[in-house]
Amino acid sequence: MSDLKTKLASQLNKAEAVSVKVQNYYDLSEGTETSLVPLDASSNSVQVIPEFAISFTEAKDRLVMLQSFVRELMIPGLDYGLIPGCPKPSLFKSGAEKLCDIYGFSKLISVINRFEDWQQGFFSYEVKATLLNKRTGLVEAEGVGSCNSKERKYKNQDAFNITNTILKMAKKRALVDAVLSATRSSGIFSQDIEDLKGDKTNGSPPLRVLPIPNDKPVNKRQLIDIFALVNDKLIPIEKAKCLMVERYKLAESRNLTSSQANDFLDYLRKLGQVEMINA
Image (cartoon, rainbow, N blue to C red; front, side, top):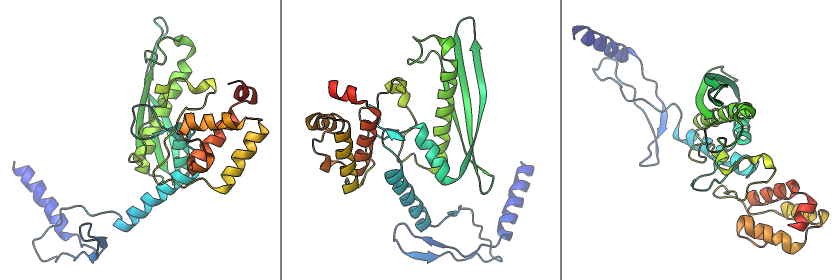
């Protein structure tokens, strides 16, 4: 007990010796800017409450920049999408990689646990993704993901032929987990669960996506591109309207949001002309 008291007293003495710099901060309750008053070194007061590393204004600016990046540069259905039963969009691998690029993160992927039973045909992988800040070299976040051949999506497949697929899925889950932590974007996205919809390698684009709140309306350039693409592919106008109703519950392209318009253009490009006409 005496040793514990000695250590505590030592820590308190160190805290008292630290000079407190004057910093600006925002009072969240009042919304006004004030200043922290430095502690008197001769007093017995000790600052034990952690301070904000950044100002309230800077934190708000970062959030606004993140939301703007998602709205303007990330593609619904490719970088993120809506999974049935999930209230928020799920972040996909391509979206996680875009966020890594814009934030300046480099990725280190390592398999931290693996189980391979080549007789029984059971395979399981656990992967860790580490994100490093390219400017400082410091670790920003770590994420963990796992996948095994007994999951619902894989249990009816030949486990010996999908070992690489299982390993890649574990890597993707770890990456998305790390990106959500490093970018503080879990308020916008949920963990990547796109595999719950089934295998996406069949070439079919996702049925629906969830637009980011406060999305901008479709612009003139997007409307022109939609009209040109429909004409180039010889898609009947009524067929195009049916597709918009199916995907967005909207029959007129002018009622689309900007994100929905980008998604619709991408959707039309992925579908072949013969499939469109005969569908």
